Amino acid sequence: MSATPTVAVFRPDDDRLERAQELLSELGAEPVPDPMLSVEATDATPRTDADYVVFTSKTGAELVSNAGWEPSGETVCAIGPATADALRAEGYTVDLVPEEFTSSGLVAALKSRVDGARVEVARSDHGSPVLLEGLEDAGAYVHETILYRLVRPDGSGESAVLAAEGGLDAACFTSSLTVEHFLEAATEGGIREDALEGLADAVVGVIGEPTAETAASLGIDVDVVPDEATFDALARETMAATAAREP
Image 1 (cartoon, rainbow, N blue to C red):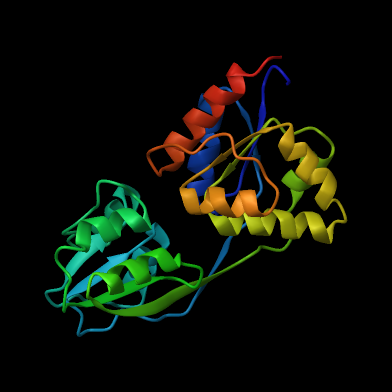
Image 2: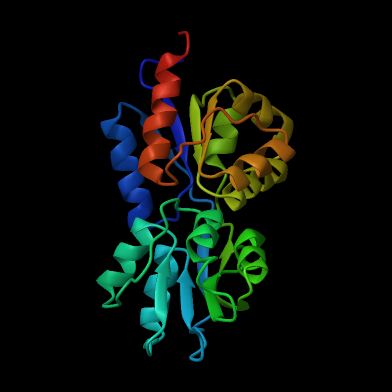
């Protein structure tokens, strides 16, 4: 491992990527920014007849504001503090944030409340089925509105090349889709197996068990899954694991 570890980060190319790079630099890393997600808005808004409206991302909060959504008495739920802060920044009141910032955490927070209720889930086209199935099992009438589609940006894959060359010390995957898009980029470049070997020698950190399961199913060993589903926790714990490795 080099004195300054190289750490791949796959956040969308906006302020999230900028903040992620700043944090990794503060923690002593050389960030390798390689956005694996690009947002295509649908301009949809949540249905107006719901008792609960659930948001699962900062992006969704901003897009419903841009599309002119106005709540009318619904209980507004955010999957975590970043989503809640984004909703508040757009002028919305947030009524519920679960203790665990995941789909299963949202289900746990809502299951005793939603029997017979109408629940609107407003999110991307790649949302986890855990949320919909869990709410339905709790007796809710669930409807999903797709606010945006997540696609792989043109030109992505620098981190896959670096991994294939043995030059990547760590990687911070923030969703199953970032894992899938990383390997898509590697496959298109004809370096999938080499990139997987490079990741095997690196510290791989992921947010959430679903992302860990996706990585494992695709042949990637996961070293770090922070208890708190935030990029801050992911970056800090991945860097700690990287520093703990033998030089």
